[in-house]
Image 1: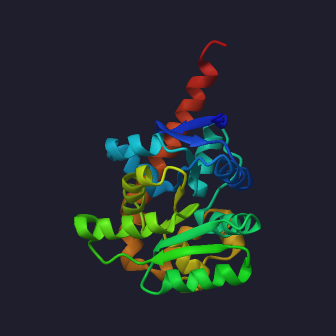
Image 2: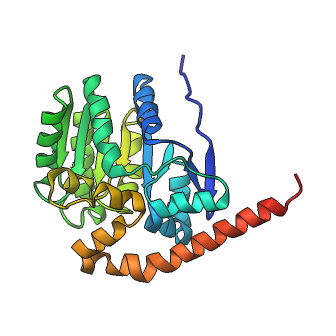
Image 3: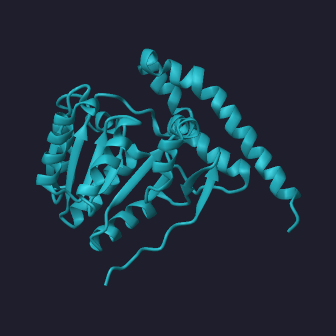
Amino acid sequence: MNHTLSKFNRIELLGQPFDVVTESQTCERIMESLRLEQGGVLITANLDFLRRCVIDKVFSHFVANSELVVADGMPLIWASRLQGTPLPERVAGSTLCVRLAGELAREKRSLFLLGGNPGVADEAAQILKARFPGLVIAGTYCPEFGFEGDPEKLQSIRDQIQSARPDVVYVALGSPKQERLSELLRPYLPQTWWIGIGISLSFITGEVQRAPAWVQKSGFEWVHRLVQEPQRLGKRYLIYGLPFAVRLFAKSAWNRVRKSESPS
């Protein structure tokens, strides 16, 4: 009999759904679904991700229909609290991917690392395998630049992953490439979980340094990242991010006021 897992409660921020889950619950759900031979897509959404959903309705529709959508950014957590629909905690892809690798290792399940800078996926695989000896590395692959517009390169990616048949694929290509590729490939491996993890493989290898834990919790990890990569992240954080954050907080505050004024 095909068992269907119950869905988590969801809230909305600017019309985009987020699952009310902790990192631990997220890992538990993925492992439970793997035991039932059910796959899915996990979206780790930050502020810039939410902004993209607002301006791209096709992308927003895909995200909304993903099996799990978690808040990977403290501004989203603050907005949910301001709105009166608090999310329990930030679920960062960079820590989730390490924790989940440990869970996969306990059941000797397999993981495929897709993306990252050249050589990074191989190095991350070695590090994860050394840390979690039961983990099965099904394969690694770093697609060539421009792969998303080349049918032959997309076919090559599909063939490699289909041949490997991993339980989980970490897609480290940055957004929205990683989400669009997951959407494209998931029908070929419906029992596999596809998880977009951005730059997390570089965090694992140390190629890019994460902010200290206290900075992460304070919500200012973006400042640490901006200092490291000002050219790549300057426009995203300063030109787009800050005004969008103001819009998000204003809307969240208004939703709370409206909710308090509505008849019970």
